[in-house]
Structure formats: structure tokens, C-alpha cells
Length: 143
Image 1 (cartoon, rainbow, N blue to C red):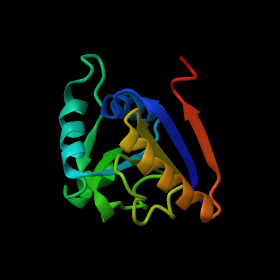
Image 2 (cartoon, one colour; image 1 turned 180 degrees about the horizontal axis):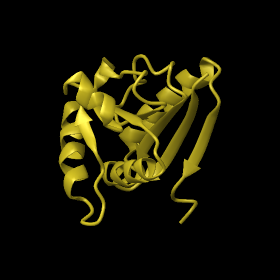
Image 3 (spheres, rainbow, N blue to C red; image 1 turned 90 degrees about the vertical axis):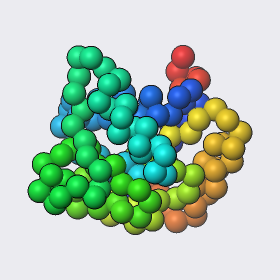
């Protein structure tokens, strides 16, 4: 069953996603990122430029199969998530990502805005109702 981790009180979820993906790549973890097209476009551009010392290889889900197979980070809009690609799914969307069940881990980023919190509560209830183990990481509490 998929392990779920919520990261709460994320000041800038997209910048945090860049750092999280850099860390995942650094330890050799493959990640599929799902979310709305606007967030994925921003993330695509940011992964090229957020750090002058690090390169975080990534591609979009509509890249050729041979490119996706060799790329550790794949950005997929909505239900395009391909569980065979990676053990970790990062959700940047407001809803429970369709097809998340085959992934080993699902990471949910929750900003500080009340709307983000409301959507996160609905996702949390969904996962809990389906028996998933949920871990909470509160960035405000960790300083």
C-alpha cells in the first residue's frame, strides 16, 4: 500500500518541490510529478535555473519513451502518471491524483493559504478512509 507523506506549511511549494527533487535525484530516487499544467510549466523552467551548481534532469510525460526511461524526474499533467517509471509520486495538484495506488510513496505539498489547507484536508480524509498510512511533516514546527 502506498505510503503517504504530507509536508505542511510550505511557504513556496514550487521552490520547495525543486529542492525536494534535487535531493531525490542526488540519492538516485526516480520521481513522477503530477499537477496542473501551469505548475508543471513553472517547475520545468525552474529546474533548469534554480541552482547554478546542480542539474536536475527531468522531462515532460509526452517526451519520447526512450527519453522518459532515462530521465529520473518526469512531469505529468493529471492522470498521465506512469507508475512503472518511478517509486515516488509528488502531487502538486488540489485533488487526489488518479492512479497513485501503484506508487510506493506519495508526497503531498501543502502551502500556507487556507485554500491549500482545505484541499489537503479533503485528500487526507480520502487516504485515511482507504487505509493508507499517513506521515505529517510540519515545516512551521521544524523551524
